[in-house]
Image 1: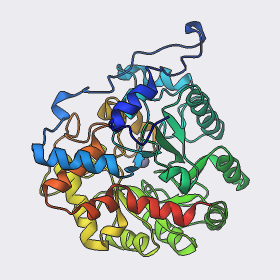
Image 2: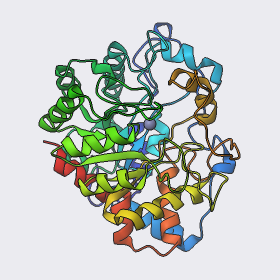
Image 3: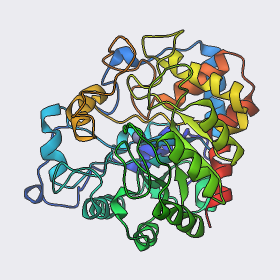
Image 4: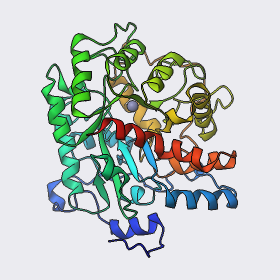
Length: 411
Ligand SMILES: [Zn+2]
């Protein structure tokens, strides 16, 4: 274990702890198909940013002395060839990007895992059996290595273990539970500590953001919110319709958060949040994590999606609700995110009326500075230092605020 006299960096300690373990290495080669994966580091060299040495030095010292939290990412290694996506998912063994995690500055990831859990038995997203299989399967792999540890309590989230990275298991929607609230307890028992109410398509709890109407939380949805309060599961309305999000805040006795979105005032899409929803979440004690998945948080000032556009959304939200209610929720993964969108968008309820109409914008192959979970939070921190933000302010955005919500909600 790490000694207090050890002055090596987090990354050095983590690379040593990782020790080259490959996903499901404990299985013989004939037990599973080993797909060729996208490189975890430097997949798109153009996406990297070189910072001023003084900024770099301050950021590194900050990262070594603070608990850095990503409110939403996907610790998901994607196949190098996008046409392998479906076959890869069918196998039900989502690969964890250990090297990328080891080289990250993040101490605690809220992990969305394989988005739209998990399309193993069919292409239908959010199947119950798939969700359970995926949550258990990845933890089986993690039990065979020492770098990644699951986080279920505030104490575990804030434990100083520089040679390890904490992972909070999350689901982007409660859709897999169907009409059975006891399944929330089952998911909690499997380690789940944050759950979305609904994804783009409506479910039995409420309306998703891709729908043309939003009747708010259903009666079952209100009971689900209460059960999540009783269990100590953080509630996420990132993909909920606006009225459903407002209802979740109204009926929850605990803070409600938006772990990954941005401001609709800057970029008028259903995926972004209007001011009243962001305000309601902040008034509940929750946060809005600002995301960076390609073509989400574009801004009028920076219409070619990049770190600068993402930070425009962060500054807008700080101005709107104060710095205590904003966080980093990059929503990135390891692989070609744009290709992944093109492959899976038709499965998320967007295939009948065409894709969600976005305002005119340039399609980018990747988001400079926010291409993957290893680089996104580091560049956000460096950007803030370069703009003169104080260390105590950056500490709130880079982890403090999300940890406060965890302290309020988790048992
Ligand atoms: Zn999402």
